[in-house]
Length: 226
Image 1 (tube, one colour):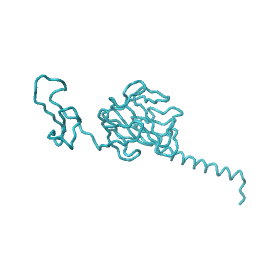
Image 2 (cartoon, rainbow, N blue to C red):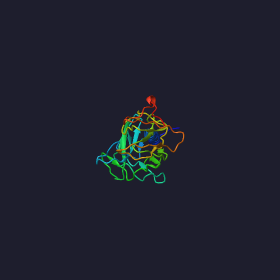
Image 3 (cartoon, rainbow, N blue to C red):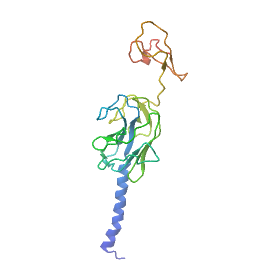
Image 4 (cartoon, one colour):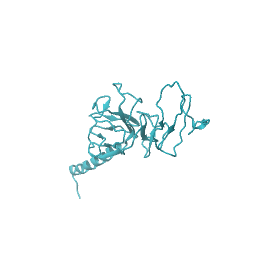
C-alpha cells in the first residue's frame, strides 16, 4: 500500500502529542505536599514579619514543573480555592514555600487566600486540568510543630518539633504528639512554697521535668519523673 508523506506525518502528529502528554504528566507527578505548619507561633516569619501558616511543596524529579493554574486548597470539594499564578514553577529537587495566610498574594512570595485550621484540615494539590496530584488528611498540629513526610516525598507522615520550611525533612520525626500536661499553678514567681501537681489526660503518660529550667533528659532523670 502506498502512503503519501502528508498522511504519514498526520499520523505521526497525534503520536508525538501523546508522547509529549505522557512525559508532561510524568514530570508533574513528581511534586508533593512535603511539610505543613498550621500553628506558626515563632518558627518562621513572612515578609511582613507575621508568623503565618505555611505549606511546603517538593519536586523530587529531575525536571522543573510549571505550576501555572494548579490548585492548592484546604477544601477537597473546591480544589481551586486558590491557584498558582502564571509563571510559577518549581525546580528539580527543589522546594517551594507557600504562605497559607489569607493575604492572597502572588509574586516572589506566594500567599493563599485561606489559613489552615490547627484543629485539623485537609489539603489537596491539583493540576490545572483538575487531576489531583497529592493530598493530606486532616490532622491536629500543636503550636510550632509541623507535619510532613520522612524522608522527603515518602508515603509516611510524621510530626517535627524542629520544622524545616524550604528544606529537607531531616530532623527527628515523631509518629505522634501528646497533649500538654496541666500544672496546678500558673507560671510565675512565688514568695512562699507550695505543692505543685502535674497531670496528664493519658493515665499511661510519663512526665519528665527539670527544676533548673533545662530541657528534661529522659536518659538522666535523677528521680525527676512522674
